[in-house]
Length: 55
Image 1 (tube, rainbow, N blue to C red):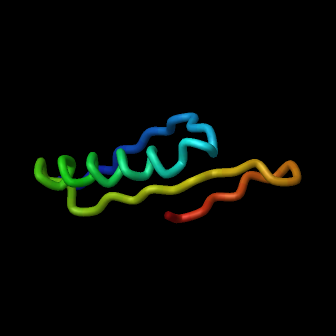
Image 2: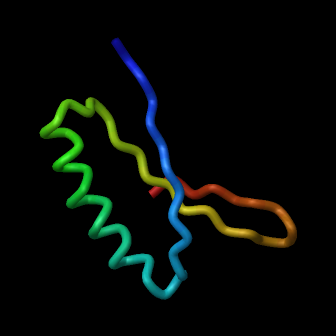
């Protein structure tokens, strides 16, 4: 059975690199427990529009 799981976390831009390191570490654990794919994105509010950047 397939499913999709997701969550959001507010992270200050200044902490982006630390957050991405955490994501990479967590992705390894998720895959160890059966995840087939892990996707991280970074969203910004720019000119009143939300822009999603795939990292």
